[in-house]
Length: 366
Image 1 (cartoon, rainbow, N blue to C red):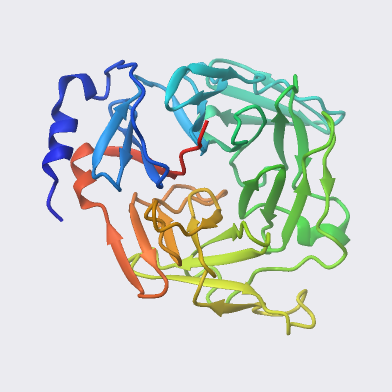
Image 2 (cartoon, rainbow, N blue to C red):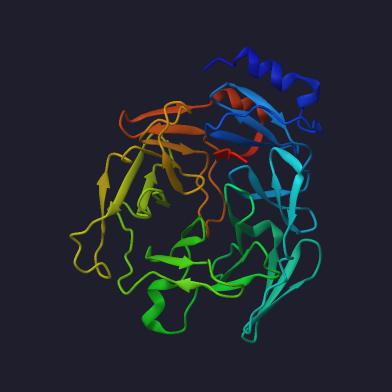
């Protein structure tokens, strides 16, 4: 794929280099776009539909971008402070409670430097908790007035994740480990998706838990039901896998791909004929269509196909596989895969930017 002349001009333009602080609001389509993070600390928005770079937000040296939702980014700065920022308006910035602001009867999180923390939990002390292993999720409403932020220290055996919503003054813990053996199927974390105020968690044994986070501060509700279901394919653990949620029905999907070549993706849904999911080796059945939707796998949910916006049905938008509890992320592989044609489109023209990270996003209207 050749580099377009418009992309060359945009990238080489002095006021669009990564450390630029240009303030003008770009004309960005509602099509899926890419948030690009060069290794030198810059931040660039790229509109694949137009084929050029639309905007450079500014210098985020020392920051980590944990998650995104609509135009918003969840950022952890060099002092380990969390905040949200609108990619199209640096003036829209929302500070969040500090990581140690957790209201819990069982634990205390203490800061022991700009980047290090300890957690005292039920008499035990967990050290070596670094800002470098903080992972997060973000959901922001179309109006930008409601949001949910979730984060955790992504280390093997971590026993809690923490969340807050707009108006909250502290985080609330959600336990990931249980003492009661009857609940061991709910232990651990292999993947997670935040869609609105619903949190979907895939446990270590691939059982899917669903939480309602819409209650008052300090409360959440497990709405998984009496018959939790594991998402297990014939190839479990052999390939990269993630869960995703359909926007139309709220159905949980399993998505697989081959990390060695990344030339295909497989899609699965719950097999209704499995009678005893607790003891079944595989519990899903393969599907070959998203039913008129496209999947933004970075975000973990589907969106309606839209010809005008260039969102083709049965498309999977992907940048990187980075599941919780994995020691290191896979390499960047910015692509769109079409389930119907089994074809893959990669954005090789972005290789020149020496990217640290990239994320697909769907611009919001506000």
